[in-house]
Image (cartoon, rainbow, N blue to C red; front, side):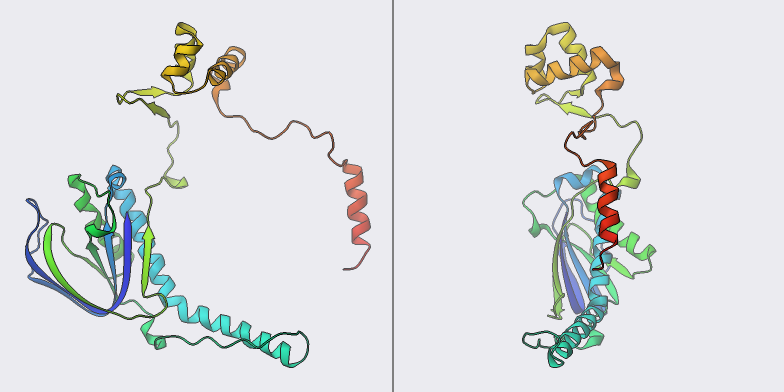
Length: 281
């Protein structure tokens, strides 16, 4: 998913005509939103339709983070200026050498760094790898729903229409942002007993390692290496591990060394620490 974020003073969208054979419902002739709006132009890519719920959640999180970035920007600059003032005072007092730094000025008035509403807009021009799946049109409405559930007033522009729109970009430091959102499984979404597969050019799924071992036992090392797209040494490695440890030996092992001959002994470490504590900084 690609997202272009524009912070604008109001936004207007006018429906023109259908652009696809199966567009989303668009009962209104126009969408008009007043106030300071964050418009999220969204391109849905091939991999995103594997799980539209998950990519919508991740897209909504990115938009929420952008809102926090905009609303928190004046305070961030304020804190930076406090650091600059302290730096300049230390120069004036002769505590450090150097040139005074300039105070940072906000480009826009402080009250412009807020987001009243969000518009999620399907935008096909951010990627060359657009999804052709029918469920791609589900993503923008799902993003809108997630943000509304979080208390962020959000609308979405329906997919599959030619539309004209008007925005007035505020032009401050964080008024324009671009995000590349990759579909990924977060730790809390991991599944137990996950199986990993090799996908052959013919589309066949092969369970890794255990199937490799069984195939090698039956057909030999060289044919197995060719079938599983690996080296003969890799086949020998898993055969050896399975021979001595069974299926439980096919999991990844820690690469941490069992021992380090040149490692400092515990007694010497304690003497060094003790000596260091006796010497003030």
